[in-house]
Amino acid sequence: MTQDYGMDSFKLGEPALVCRWRLAAGKLPLEGRHLRALGSRTVNGGRVGQPIVAWAQQHIEWTLEGGSEEHPNGVLMLVIDVDGQAAMTVGPFVPLEKTDLLDLLDRSEQAHAEAANTGVAPESLWLVQDGTLVWDDEPATTASGSASLVEGLAHTLGIPVRRNAALRKQVKDGSIAFDEAFLVSDEYGVVPAQDRNGDMARRFSEGYERLLAKMRS
Image (cartoon, rainbow, N blue to C red):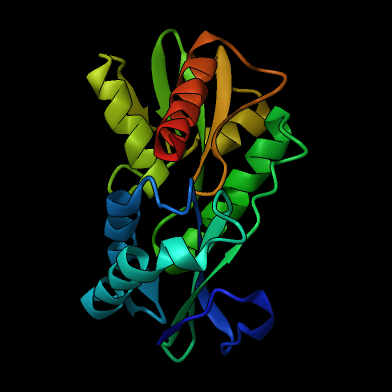
């Protein structure tokens, strides 16, 4: 295992798992949440395991700030290849260009297709229905770091939250009524759907941005 913060020399075997985590001022704002989700992910049919989690934590705490000097507000990428070898690198953050509901739905579908092999979806689609948050995951699955943040914040604010594994299909066929929609992403944070934005989506998006700003101050 190695950490390599230079993109040009970053080489591994065929990737089996890629995690992309947003940085702020060379720090990882959701470090604990991301590492817990990492430990629940699977590679080649087995759990990632505590040794890799401990390795990732060590390098995040000891070398990330110096290794992210070129992109302090970029994205930390942790890659585990098919042989179980892991490496980390840092790249620039590039905001999403397309944020309409169908674009966010497509991203969530891709993330859940990935989760069929890795156990954790790095992005999820959330809807607001009469003051309740509903998100597109199985009830028993492990939440990503960002999803656990939003879920925890909602509970703190007294906002009901429930999961609905059929949500994506219902959005596509128009069989579900809702007021707002947003994407929750380990890389992009909380992204309101441009065509289904609203007060609650903005509330969570602004809360996430305040967290990043606090890390930078």
